[in-house]
Amino acid sequence: IGALFIISTTLYQTTLPLINSISMYYTNKGINVNFGLSRSMGSVSFAITSTILGIINEKYGCSLIFLVGFSLYIIAIFVLLSMPVIKSNNDNKNSNAFENINTSSHRENISIYQFILRYKYFCVCLIGIMFIFVFHNMLNAYMIHAVRNLGGNSSHMGVAISIAAFSELPAMA
Image (cartoon, rainbow, N blue to C red; front, side, top):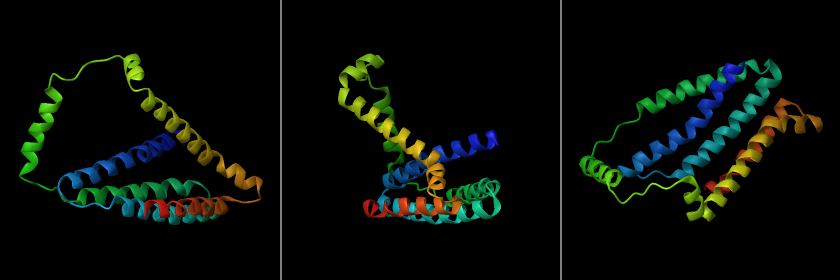
C-alpha cells in the first residue's frame, strides 16, 4: 500500500507541471490556449470524480480508488500521446535564441545566501506559498476526520470536496 501511495502521489505531483508545460508549448507555437477555461473544466472534472469516488469508497472500500485513479492516468497518457506535435519555421530560430541565452556570459553565479539577500520579497513570497500548501495538504489529508466528527462518511467527504472544487469556478472563469 505504501508503494502504491508513493506512486500515486508522484503521478499526482507531476501531472500539473506536465499539463502546464504542454499548454506553454502550444501557446508558444501560436495556438490560443484558454487556460482559465481549461483549468475550470479540470475543477468540474475533479468535483464530479470526488463525488463518485466518495460513493465508491463508501460502498466498496478504498481499494478501488487506486484502480480508478490508475485507469484515469492510463486514459490521460493516451490523450497526451494523441496530441499533435506542431512544427513551425520558428523552431530553429527559437532554439538558437534559447541557446544564446543559456551560453551568454551575463549570468553570474551567486550563493543561496546572496540570492536571498537580493530577492528578499520573492523569498518571503515563496515561504508564504509554502505555508499555504502545507496547510492545504494537511486540510486535505485530515478532512475525513473532520467530516466523521460531524457525523459524515466518505460519501459526504466527496461532496464536500466537490463543493470546494466548484467554488473555484468563478475565479477560473
